[in-house]
Image 1 (cartoon, rainbow, N blue to C red):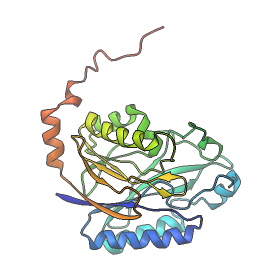
Image 2: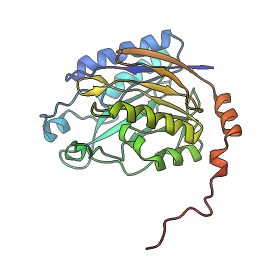
Image 3: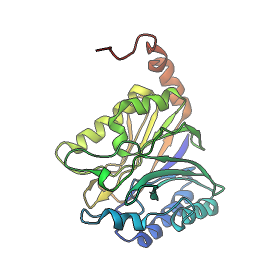
Image 4: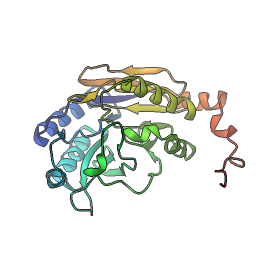
Length: 269
């Protein structure tokens, strides 16, 4: 068994206050013998509805900026891997990438993913402030297993998780800021469980809590069992993951092997 730390946090508007909390959580996770500490989407700062696209863009940073650099240093000092998120500067004026990253315990960046599905739904329009990424990032090895990286709204598009799973992912890590609303928590629980079951993998989904967000950070095992549900509690949750469990479930329920990719195709209309 390998210990994973999941952080459920309420982000402040101020970047510096959030960074202080984040660094503290990394230290806590290491002290609790976790090999990986996973944070939610928008952990850099909370973006109020009235914050303009230009204001947001002015606060965004590059990968080598102060925010990611401080987190990388904390990962190295605590000898722990970290998955986090930040607003990354993009080439488009007044638009930023919503980017997740995996930092190794040596403080070096292992992988980076820019959110491809922007949340233009249910009364929101992220595309007025965010710029979409252009690719799914191939799975990468971590201390916990082979990880596929997604962000929040990506969960609603099963093609993405399936591509990551069929490409070798044993764990899907999905930093999220799931907005509250009618049936939203029900959707959140159902979709996370479904992505785990249909792909025979773990789903680790740290979520924002407070502000406009629903909380309920989850860890789901490959057979759909919820190992961790943080409800509305801010702080750290710990879950044990086992790659043997992934192998056993995929052997008993070989969904990836049983696919008929020789038949699946869009109809020509």
